[in-house]
Length: 114
Length: 114
Image 1: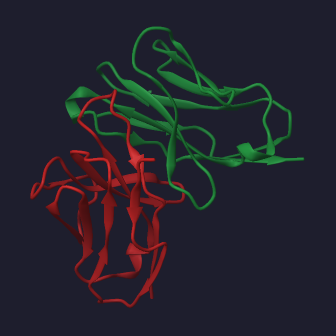
Image 2: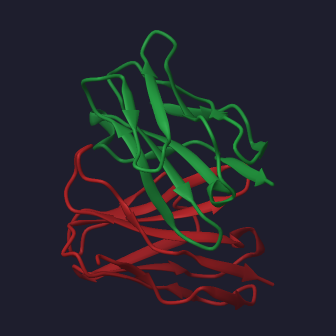
């Protein structure tokens, strides 16, 4: 069964800490995405990547960066965590660009910044 | 730019009753439409999609959605719900001009009661 694995289910971090959220997919997918999910706002795209070492900003990239050194791994980095980054973070992947290629989502990481 | 509006944030419903979740989109070009479901403590899963052809699409677990171009809608329906349908449901749209990336609505929480 194909999988997108997010390394942590729950995280609690302090304001100002550097935070790494890890995502690994085992499907040899080209594309990977990071979303944050907030009540009443749905999913908003933070960053995405169409290839190794490639990254592009999504709709809400401020306060975040990403790294994709290997095809299967896409990391989201909060350089200096703030309380307004408390949220559910979802990683997704897709094989190629196009409507026929569905997204596979991880189970999410619920981050609390205190 | 495209956007998605889910008109109901919460839908309580009794078991075996019908349910309809409303989704409207705005786009000046042709769109591809999706419904995703998120069960408690899980990631999102694709429920059904409209790419082309018949405007009525069905899922394997009894949901259906109808693409209405004139109304710019893609409402989701199920004639008889089960307790196990309790979940959050997201409508999403993709367009070629945005590299087919998914844009999500705010979500509708369905709570099925016995």
